[in-house]
Length: 527
Image (tube, rainbow, N blue to C red; front, side):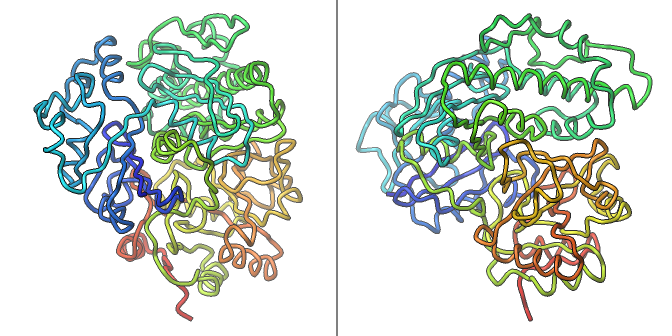
């Protein structure tokens, strides 16, 4: 049995391939198309998925007719009526499907005759059975069924699914039970995106920049005003209610903005409010579900600054390395199978074969201070974890400035360290209970920021990635040799891309990157 999970037609399209309930391949559309946050499927990624054989089932991460109903009720008529039917999209790429529930609720009916679906004689040969799933169920399943927990609370926070914006679940014995749901227009994610737009950034894409910008602002300057102007008082339940519908942004919200620092202060105040709201929701999740294990999913789970507070209430926390919509390509399949899978690695994308270029990378780091690595399967998720990474010496401010220049980024933007797991507590104060952070989902406070300015943010924190030999033998060996020669057990690790572009994916991308940006990108060990 071959099952595909797909997210597409909204933003950040992705595909996941399961063979006999084993996750074999997962990739973002942007990596093969070269278009940042590409919402469309493309033939190249479909062909990569087909290398595992034609699918018997295809699962879609949200329910289209319900989403279109919400779009109609919220006045988004152009979105509701656009002809981007999932099954038509797949058919145009040569993937034919059929459904046992082809009815008037199937939005493909707007573009295909009823007879094409109702007559079993019209089912194309090799057609895959097609399933829709609920958006938040896909999020929850992606987290719970890839977690090491059989009994866990599940908190999902995002901008919006079909109608849901916040859900709390209890996962136990391979079943998920929804215990709380909040619906549009009340949405923490929509509010955070609106504030992203308010400070001149791109909503639904550059929220991570707001999070980084917050470190240079005053978190108290606008904090109370934000609560007063946007939020209804908390009522002791997980309901986070807003005074206005923020789906179209909040450019009308106009405190006095005369300097760049004023914008930084809004970013800092926004982040401070989010952290308070997030901790409140974690606390309420604990009250509702109990348990000692927590799964956090949805786009808001990428806020690594806030995530650490979850350890105040739960002993163990799991965040799948791709918690946003793209990760739901995995989740919608797992929502169907209801089976835990061993999520042994986030390296699930296009594979560049060959040994990890340990010796050559070490030489470049010792002589130049910076090197790109594109080797092995690409990471499934928004963060480079060693296989599509720009690595650099973390010990000098000049290196931070150089890497920011190469990547065309704002000078305040932080960089993350990758460190051998056994050394993390020697260099960072991590959230209590957080002993391992392999996917850069939590921040720690650097104990000697004066020695490691390239990976230390202005507030003294770092988004830490820990690595073990078992998780990544090649990268661990590189760190081990670097430590032996320099006394430093970590490297700066950032994604191998330029602002506004997706990460390097294949060998041709690596060659172009080397030529265009004058930074050597290694694809294999040729020694």
